[in-house]
Image (tube, one colour):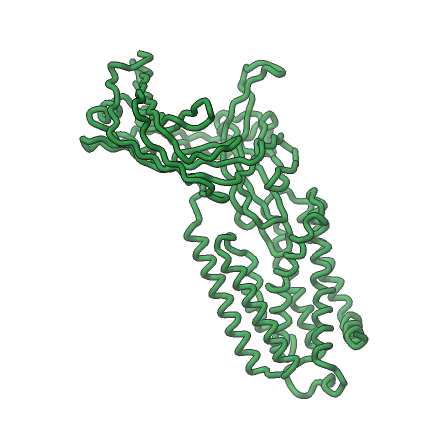
Amino acid sequence: MHEILVILKKDVRRLWWQIGAAAAMSATAGCLDARRAAAQPGVVEGLLNVLLPLAWAFLIAQAVHGEALVGDREFWMTRPYRWGRLLAAKALFAALAVHVPSFLTDAAILAAHGFNPLAALPHLLGKQLLLAGRLTLPAMALAALVSNLTQFVIVVPILLLATAVWMTPPPRFPFGHIGIAVLAVAAVSVMLLQYRRRRTGLARIVAVLGGLAAGALCALGVVAGVRTTRHPFASPPVVASEVARIAIGPAPGSRISIACFGETSAPRVSAVIPFVATGFPRADRWSGAWLSLEVSNSNGVRYDSQLHVGAGSPTRIDRRVIGGTHYTRTTTKIENELFAGWSLGPDGIPNALSLSMSRDAYDRLASGKATVAGQGAADIYENPPVRLRVGENREVPGIGRCSVRAPQNPHGYQLTVTCESPSERPMQARVAYEHPVPGGGTGTEKQVRRMQEQVMEGEYPGSQTLLSPLHRGVVYLPVGDPWTPLPADQAVVLVQRISARATAEIRLVDIELPDTGRCRGR
């Protein structure tokens, strides 16, 4: 142990100002991260995310080259150094110069954002293990394969590829973590070969093979993640764990009811078709949506919930300039669309399919026996929603800490909801907001209306960096629209964790739709 401390003291005395500079960079990046509320880092913090890993890598390389392993004319070889103690001294130097400042900075960031560092200790230690596999061990291995710092500069792009693995794919594609493990094993093998046997040629072969294997695994993870990336405006993804499969079938002896609206202008028909749902999970709170639904009849008429009735749907395009910004809005006439939903029974379980369509579309479907087929999904919530006002930052069970920010313009039309957590689990949350109805009363009688609703899943792209211990998710909620913005400070945002999802399959055949002559509400 005395020999290890002597070598460590010598390296610290020789590199003290480099150690101080790296620690100052880490503290600066931590202060910027602790102060920002946005998901993505600013310019200075982003620059530090690039420079600090390089500073750590060169610091480790300088310590390793204090007793270089390549060549046969190094003075230290004449001293009674044991390879195990020399390697232990270099590893201890890396821990004190890199991991201790990083750990303290991470703890300070979590405390500044309202998290208890002691409660998040497993996540902090896990981040240090990943940092060792992605940066510390590869840097030590590369430094052990070259004879001086100039050669290390030449091969440092390889190290940058290793640290790029930090942007890991989603957890369901663990190729990134497997690649890091392969890289760490290869780095340890290289150091053992060099410090114990000084087999430089074999060690370089091991390093190349390990780097290629880790890169291939990470590439597979990126490709798999890209293939499953959904469009931001697509239907909500399957989140959490699937707990049930719901089968929806016909309800024998039930009666289909229809109602007609707007007889003189844009006539529409609403039909309610009872069904029986089996396998529906019991949950205190849930919400559902049809992901796909197709309605057809025996005469070849076919519509779906995304298809506009008719060959061409009339549209109206509005272009306006608000505050120097150009906005374009395209509106499709509502009478040419098919809408689907479901109705709830007294026990809170859906018991009927509701279809709303134009009168002409309904008459075409009613000309023959109809068939309904499609898929739906139900999001299940394990906790009641947490209500947040603009400027608030509160704990949301199962998610982390969430905050709501409004635009600088008090009458802006977009809220930003940001959730932060030291955990790597996906931020599967339902985010919605309520806004007072104009003229809806005052005090406890004030009416509210539920507005935009979105699903937050996973991290916001570019939010996770090498230095930050926090994972962040973001949702943008329009408050009104650019033409009729509502006061943002009156909105209340509801955030609620999605614990699981159930999938639903519906198939109703040989449905005889009532003639519109039996319409209610004519």
